Image 1: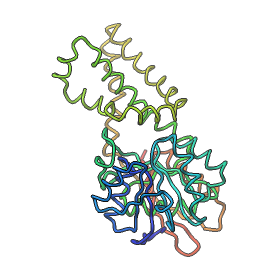
Image 2: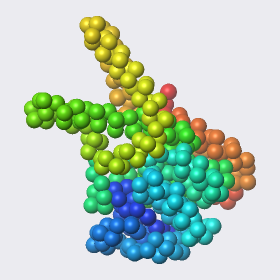
Image 3: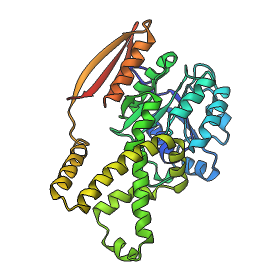
Image 4: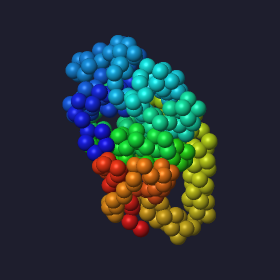
Length: 337
């Protein structure tokens, strides 16, 4: 798969909600031999109505597959991983699309699966849920985290090629624990803030007037509060320590803003907002430097893993991976300083 994605590669997608469903639809649209499975019969029927092959039994879905995407609620992923690993051969690559990584990566290590299980997290989504909300282009130009392991580099390389070629996503290689620390601030705390703002509006004596006047700032700031509550709860509990640590950083900055306002210090308040605007403006138009890096396939795996994780920690990503003879080559992009 690395360097050239076989259009008839046999893939299964388990759990076809918003993320898994979008993975399924994109693979199907790309012409891969893909089959879906979901524990909900109505969801399976929806998939069939969309013309996507769907199995009634999990064992049927993963039979003779070369790659399996694991979706579904976060608490179910460890059991699903063990079940699917037992049903598939050693050459079957496994990955997931869950929003936390450290716990599942550690669990996979205890099960001896790191050679063929690559923890993954596509950073895309909406405030809607289910297969009816899934779209095949959800991951276009999105960041897709993959966590490389020293004994799983062959599997990692295969996935990089597939995700960059078929999904047009940017692969961000990252250690599992670093991923959880980063998404706590980038994704999970925003769910807390959105919930707090929307919840305060719901409880307000001025609720109806607030909702009538709600403009872009309120709508954008509360968008993810519309995410299914159980899904948000699973995500926050699955990354509780990192979320609480990041929340302390956010509340500390909020205290600085409120203190400046309380003390009526306009210069300080302006300075804090100017600082915040720097990060906001950097979300778009950030320049990257292109870098080519190669490693011998029989070289020290730690060197490759260290470089990959350092790239992701520095805000970089991969847009390609190719194995040619005894060498693997990556096309990387690193933010310009």
